Length: 457
Image (tube, rainbow, N blue to C red; front, side, top):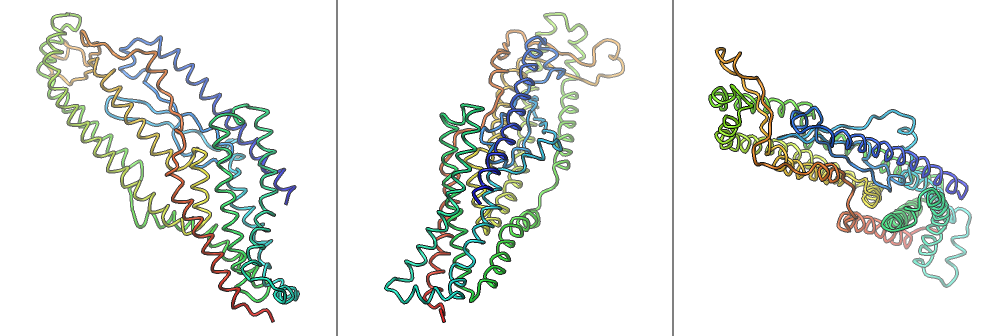
């Protein structure tokens, strides 16, 4: 067991760290190239979308311990006037395959199996060998026997885990000092809380099964049957049951509705601007015409943009609210399994939990509103379908700065366009901590009452 821990934990941590380094290096190179291009591009090409305004998401440092939903999140977001476009990372590479095994999986799968190996005969096995009757013949309380077995088995599992964990941290610290300093070190230390708590739950569960059976073979079979149910069946059933209980249309259907609304926006904008567009855009270079057009256009655009901004926001909020309800249903059902609660705690500390998705999308929406006002609001970008008699007199599209309006500084835009996972919220792990602790105590207390009535003959 010690050999498994000191080999598998450091190796998985290092492979995940290499994937993290590659991801961060690619992101850094992508941002630097984008920054140079963005700073050199004139505003009219930016507003036109030839060089879009991008935001980047920085992966969590503790991705090395828990992949979580990291691979499911966008790596970049394109900020438009009224909508956002996300780009997702490409899966299927060798590093993508290797980083599926992490510390969270090692503890949740391998250590839980080992815990059952060590506890399935804690009581039933001693009954078969006759030592249980001998122990009870002495002046010792039954709860003390169970407590000794609980503490002994938790320590038996904890020592190899801590050895492998410390070895993995040493290797990572030698490669990157961030792992042994500051927030990263603090959060890494906090990973021991859900890890040891989960071991307590699994050991208590193994002892309970042993107290409910009369021989070690039955105990082992029942332990693995229940392990399969809680570890493999419950999480997968919850993922299937969630969409059935809270149905939500696929992403492409929602995207189609957004695209249709954007087409409606463009058509109405063209209709409402046509008259003044045909009158003043016969010569876009004429300062007087341009100013007059901008003045007459302003209230129309404010009305149309406000109208469709509210409609698009309502569509997005309704869709993501239903998606969130579906996700909450899945999370609630999956918490029947202690493994799920352990995973939610572990990934929350690592900054790779489902909370990350909501935080990132909220950041993107707030930033989009800021850019819509501070950048897009300073420019005219109009495409109008003119009447046949005007087709040779006015351009199809005009792009230019509104006189007197100053857009945000380009350096500020590219500097503020990086999102990193925020600091850990205690509230995000408190529910699962209480739930896991309650399950562990319930298992141990139940095993005590079962042991009181246990036939040792």
